[in-house]
Amino acid sequence: MRPVTLLHIADVHLGLNSAPDGGLEERAFAAAMDLAIDADVDAVLIVGDLFDHTRVSDDLLAWTAKELARVERPVVLLVGNHDALDDNSVHHRFRVVERCPNVILVADPDGELVEVPGTDVVVWGRGMVRHERAYKPLAGVPEKPADRWGVVAAHGLVLRDDRPSHHSSPMRPAELDAIEWDYVALGHHHGYDVIREAPTPVVYPGATARSLRGEPGAVVVRFSEDAGTGFEWVPLAV
Image 1 (tube, rainbow, N blue to C red):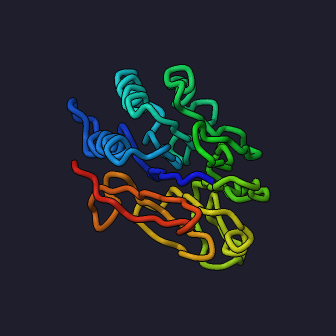
Image 2: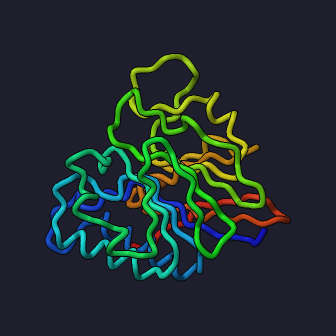
């Protein structure tokens, strides 16, 4: 398989700040797109909460589309609890696939596997319609396809143990144990957190604007036949 480099971000929360010139979230997102270009990654993975709420302005939607398009490489996008695919979802106005041909929206609530164009990477994820206990981000993860780098993407909360929980969008340790893929890309927790490094890395990149000790950041993931899966947290110049 060909070596691949991905940029993993989540919890961007565009629209959180109503300042006329945009807030930290917008600047951090633009910096992440700059990093994707400067590091010459093969694709970008956004694991939920690109937008903070449903009321973001049309101007912000247009700006976001331009940012996604200017990276000129595939972007795989999942939604999160702040921009879930319910009837009022901001994504019905955003129509990202129409605006940005380079973006792949993972929307099927039963889970779907997408090929990342120009790479040997596949990404599996489930669309979120409602952030609730019944929604299980890791339910139904299939076997990893042969001869592909495999990424499972999920927006939710990793629980401490496998006991029943009141939390919405739960992910249990036993579910993670069963995943024999190359990388699990998470979103929802706002701090950079490596849940486990091996055998399959499971990583929260943190909120893009406040990823590590309050500093903006993202995670760069590398796959190669010689080294396997590697990842590193990278600060963003905001």
